[in-house]
Length: 311
Image 1 (cartoon, helix red, strand yellow):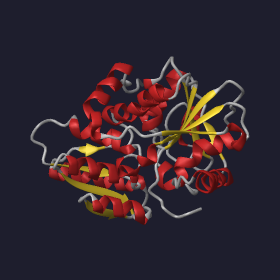
Image 2 (tube, rainbow, N blue to C red):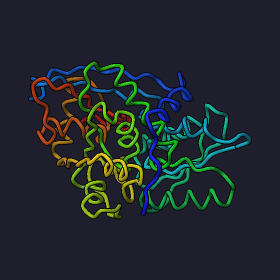
Image 3 (tube, rainbow, N blue to C red):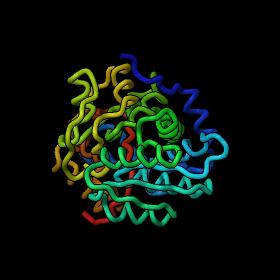
Image 4 (cartoon, rainbow, N blue to C red):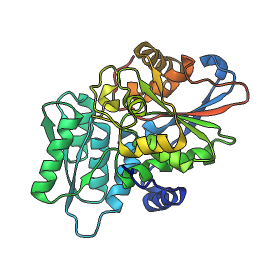
């Protein structure tokens, strides 16, 4: 069975031109390699400073700006970050938004959705149940769905982060990205294909890409752990799976205690209050599961900050 048509570098450049200054050019911060036990140069891409608090704003805005004329509203489903981003993008375009979330979503993320004027729909179950409810609502009301990670527009929009990083970090050799549904991984990996290695990392309790690569096809499995609210889709997205297959990527798994330790480091030493999912790339480097050697230049994407509890 053939996979989806992956966005090219040119497609992602067109998405960057489309969303333009509608999204923030988020900062990068270099941390001393000796602080985290590595020999190379390490940069944090602080995407938690993006509109709506996460990288999801890029894909959501690219989706909204790609809609045909005459649309009156959108609908979306999410564990929280994509819902907030979709609400923000819809508000910017003066569209109504209906956002479906699992009942276990983080309250701070739900508050963001409401702040941007969306109608919030709580659903019993996980993100998969929220997606099913969202599709039923879309069919009943004729509204387009902004998928959180598995459409061309979402992936191309997310990939604009890779173009920014390339401009911000000279001699960039590797980008480490937490992979849930995999839209960000797929977008950045296709943006930087042949230019820098993009390494997907997952919590041990949410190994969706890992399991798919082992099985040879995306498979459904439960998610658990501290990062499951953001990295716990029903299964890996088709774009992420196709990208990892085409590039021969091997996802790296990260233990729960490493994620907690990375989050604590970011807050206590850098004063960056990231949500657990956003700490997975740093956790992989600090734990040595992603190796950074002398002469390497690595960027770690701190993807969101919509969980304000201090570690």
